[in-house]
Image 1 (cartoon, rainbow, N blue to C red):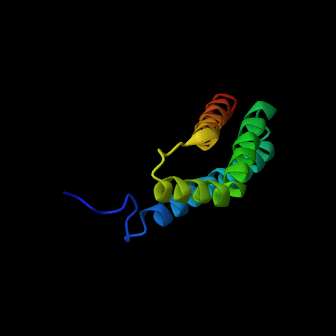
Image 2 (cartoon, one colour):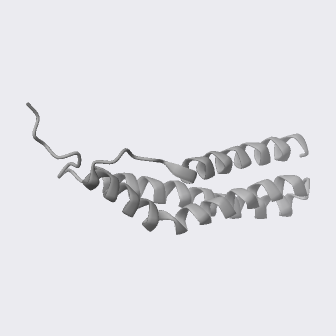
Length: 109
């Protein structure tokens, strides 16, 4: 019989938090750099707008890091199921915005 608590002393939730921070930072920073590159290259403003959207979504994800971590810890310690909520949707939308911006960028060069 396993009597271990649902959280682990191995800091899994802290590592997951850092992974979310890396994802959000990559979206925000990469989106800003890509939007600037698209504008300097003179390609379609749609490409720059898609990259800017990715940067905005990354910034929102980064700002929500503390809230998300508190929810995960509360769920683990309270025995409730984990709910990814809107954060997963924001991350997916950010990744799709990067992909759309890259496609438009390449096609309009």
